[in-house]
Image 1 (cartoon, rainbow, N blue to C red):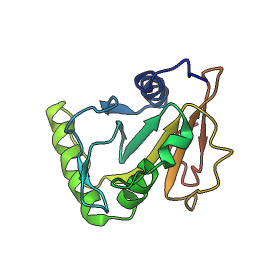
Image 2: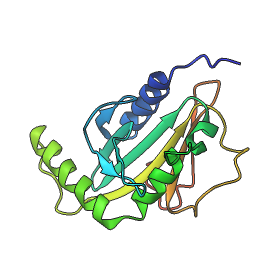
Image 3: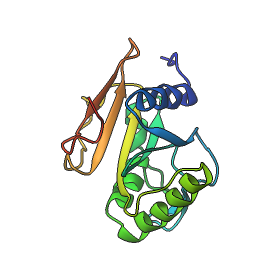
Image 4: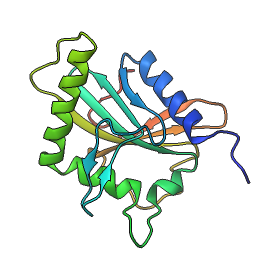
Amino acid sequence: MKSALSEDEVLDFAARFLTIKGFRILACGANQGGLFRFRTNAGRQKAPDLVAFLDPLLLVCEGKIRSSDLFRKSILRESDYECMLGLARSQKQQIKLEDEAQRVLRGLGLAPPNVISIKVGLIGGTPFASLTILPPPNEVLFLEIDPSMNITVHSDSEGCIPA
């Protein structure tokens, strides 16, 4: 069954949701290019699909139409889930993204905070409920878009997304 949404539409909808919650979108789009690139555990460069900032939080996300595709890996590549989990656990890569966030914020005419906290997330256009491979709740946020175009945030034990 073909989804009614494209990946860019899933990301755009998530970006609008985050904007309403007070975030500033710094990068958005499938294959958005070189902004906020980081090195995965497998050693390849990856640019996230969506990056949003709400002082002092930098939310770095990957998104897919089907949530299960975020967990799909190939012989040569890690899954998006593995990439995001690796970023959540890599101080070195987080420092690189913090530096880039400060540069981008200054470019927008904003005074960046001295310390930026990084949170990673996965955005899916189908339910995450059927998935069995989930990280500890404090490591990865899950943003789920339902058929009614509502967004549910899962695993937000730290209260990253304002109510």
